[in-house]
Structures are given as structure tokens and as C-alpha cells.
Length: 568
Image (cartoon, rainbow, N blue to C red; front, side, top):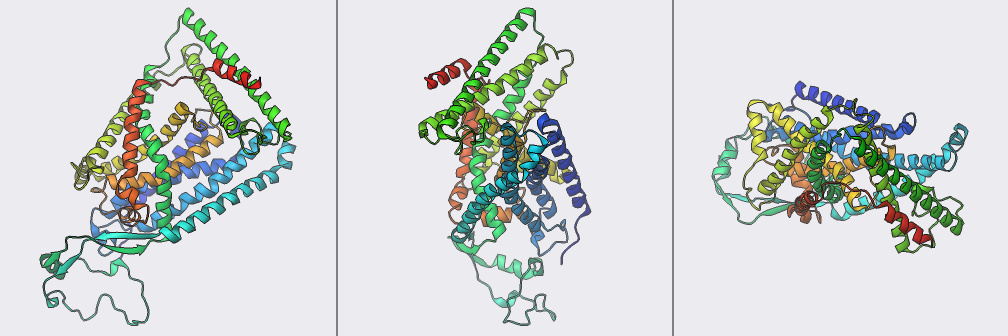
């Protein structure tokens, strides 16, 4: 018999939702670029709600643990001591929301926003021009969105058709007693099938709690040495969650590993490099250096613009390639370029963007040391130091927990963090739940930090930093998509890492039983391939950042000379 939902859990859900909504709105308002202040309302809505969905996804884990109260009967057959929430329904809702954002809302918002940006650069920065081409922007975004959706649907249904079977390992026992010992017959059976020609749906709450017959079986049985298996097909939502987790793991293992090392270091370095008062000589030298870098980057920008225009004219594109920001793209007039040339163009643009970003950062630091020195809040670097020390502790705990609990074959060396969470549960369960939420959400922040750090150091893709009063919606959408892509791998990883603490949670049965043993995917998850990669990246990044802790700007002079040599 189902139990009513615990009002404490309902209140906790509402409070968590309000906190996520307020934090998301605050970040969006404080970090948005002034150019987007009264623009891009739909992308803003997508970013705001996407942040709520991603945050709620990782917070469902501690809610799931609290709902099941550490008792296996909460899975359905004895819910008298449980929270009463249908966590399977909750998880399925979010399993569908994440791909809906990843493959529908975020791509469409990005295509629409970039199309608007391209037309502004093309000279349509008037009310009449924007209204005249609004339908065109929507149509262009819908075309790209349709193409993306076709590919995603095709991949999903093909993989579901071939890879949706899961072989769940089971321990087989043989009962050595007599059947007459097992059952006490009741006048009215608990579960009665009146029409055997129909297959009735079976619910776990129709089972009785463990009784005398179950105890007899446990005392009189023979355990087979080899494990058996049961092959079943998982549902659509469960398989999609597994597929999204598999794809997301490639990003989370890389960016999460980088972020675990980079997050505390950068926060502590913010304190080390805090603004200090400059004397006249230091002020003059810093001002001269910044002026020279500005002039160099202006020259580089002009050279890039000339090169872009020449390629457009040579290809007959007439500037239809989408402007400077689409440099080296498919429609950018570079059809006669070789692959090597296009690669060089992309590298040049990324180096230019990195140099601009580092210059803007140095200019802000210069102002804090001079013009804004008297108004600069000294608590900011102190707060950064405190948060950095906390982040360092959490990162060390994560690395130790992976080594001591997650990776050892067979039995772990020690439960480590699981003991910490369970100790809290014995005297104040809320602290244990909040601790799980903290450790889980920290991994999402590390993924965003690691993506930016990796892009800034190795220039494989465009960087999307979150800057106060300087973040465009394209960067918001990129980081929201990254958070959502990494949310399911984070949940799966934490379900495995906190297996003792969350052993009776519903999500443990989903990720730890059904998804973990899916065809093809199980070889990566059972053998902890991604976890080894995450740990290796974190350790290598720690060594690398220990040798090179400071981000350096691109050599502007060398970049300018290289552009001039390309022009002949």
C-alpha cells in the first residue's frame, strides 16, 4: 500500500527549486553583457530554466536517498517508513528534460542568437532591419534545428534497437528445504489473478514484507559459485539516460579532471595576485605595456579583417559567410583553402581571442590597482582564498575517495566519504544530504572550469568565460549545455562513488543495475574506464599547473608577423 508523501521532502523540493531559480536569475543578470540587456529573451529563458534543470538533476540524488530512508522496502513492497515520493517518475521526467534542452532548446536558441549577431554585423542594426529579417532568422534557426534533430533521432533509435538489452548479473541459490515450510495460506490472497489469459501489470507494493518463509529460504539454500544473468530490455527514458551519460562521460572525464585541479588553484591565485598599490614607476611600465598590447591587437584585428574580405571576394561570397566570427566556417568563403590552411586560420583566430581575453583581464586588474584601488573591496580576494581552500579540500577528498573506494577491485579499501555521510545520518540527516549535494554540485562547477581552462591553455576550441557584466548569450548557452551534458555522468559517478550511502536509492537501481550492464556500454562502466581517465587527467593537470600556474597571453608580435607573412 502506497504511503503519503513526506511534507518535509515536499518543502525541501520547493526550497531547492526557489534557491536554484534565484541563483540562476542572479547569475544571468549580473554576468550578462550590456549588449544583451534588453535582447535575446528566449535564450535567456532557456539558460535560466536550463540551469534549474541541471542543478535539480544532481540534487535529485540526495533527495532520492532521503526519500528511501536507507530501507530496501522503499522500492515498493513496504513503504511505511519511507518518504512516499515516486522517484522513478522524477528521474524519468529529468531523463527526458535533459535531451530536450540539449537537442531542441539550446541548439535552436544558439542558431537564432548567432543569426541575429551575424545580421547586426552585416549592417542590420536598426529596428526596421531587425523586424524585416526576424522571420528569416527564425527560419534559418529552424532549418539547422531540424537537421540536428534528424541526426539525433536517427542515432537514438538505431542505438536503442541494437544496444537496449541489459544483462543484469544475479546470484543464484537453490533451496534445499520443503515447500510446505514456506507458505501460510490466507483466505483472501494478497495478489490474485482472476483471468490467467491476461497479463496483468505487477507492482512491487503488492509484495508482503519479509516473513517466516523468506527466513527459512535464507537458512536452507545452496549458493552457486558462478553468477547468472537476466537479460531484459530497458525503457526508452532509461536508455536515453544511459546514452546521454555515455556521451557526457567523454567531456566530464576530461573537463571534470582538469577542473578538479584548476578550481582551487585559480581561486587561491586570485588572492596571491590581488590588487596592490603601484608606485609611479610601476604604473608607467604597466600602462606602457598595456598600450603596446592594445596597438598590436588592433593591427592583428585589421589584418584578420582584410584577410577575411579577400577570401570572400575570391570565392564570390560577397560577405555572405556570416562575418568575422564565422572565420573558417563552411560558408565563410574559404572553399579554395586547403585543410591545412583552414586549420591555421582557426588556430590564428583562437590565439587572437585568447590574447583579447587576457588583455581585458589585465586591464581590469590594472584599474583595480590604480583608478579603482580606493573603492576595491578587499574582502573579495580573502573570500576567494577561503573558497579556494575549501575547494582544495573537496578536490583532495574526491581524489582520495576515487583511489580508496571506487577503483579497487572487489571490496574497497575503505568506505571513506560514505562513512562520513552515514555518520551524519545517525544524528542529523540534513547535514548528510547537504554534504552529498555539495560534493555532487562541485563536480559540475569543475566541468565548466575545466572546459574554460583547457580551451585557454590548448586552443582546441573557442573559450567561453563567464565574465561579470561581460558574458554574451552564446557563452551562457554553451556553458548551460556543458552543465546539462555533464549532469548525468555526475549523477552516475556519484551513485557509484556513494554506493554504500545510496544503496537503497531508486537511482542506484537505474544506473547501478540497468544502465551499468547495457550492451556495449558496460565494458566502459564495469571496468571503470572513464573513472581511470578522470583520475589520470586530474593528476596530470595538477602536475602541469604546478609547473605553470599562471595563464599567459599569446605572443601578439609573433601572431602579427605570421599574419603579415601569409599576405605575402
